[in-house]
Length: 188
Image (cartoon, rainbow, N blue to C red; front, side, top):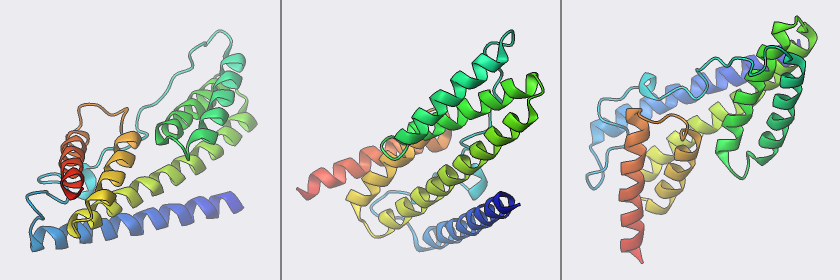
């Protein structure tokens, strides 16, 4: 029950942050761009940001799902510990936890499935919150022409979305990163 209320609180916080991001984006769009740089991708809304965790994972070894689940859990633990240093590892950790949960469900190990799923949901909520925070930070940095911060936030966002090739937002981040980098070099 305590975990359910924590997850609900995190989800409500994310909803509030996304609402603030949408209001900020609308205000920035009304105010106009800074130095030719858009605050958000052209024509974007809060719905156009890519989901970080939308792909369902299958068990890599359905003949021995317990072994596969334990290996995935072990990899997830390692990657989760590395998340503060490389955001890609947090996303990969969630993917590994998805795999472990799927493998446990194949053999009906519901307590293990639920334990892994709760851990996965908590980590995914933390990473999603960081994702919203980075998007807001980037919008504020662009608005205030703080190019060093804009470069930091685009790097952070590119790490979080590196597994999502081909999305307009990911492409926009690449262009924004290049422009922010050029602005930082010009400041030197």
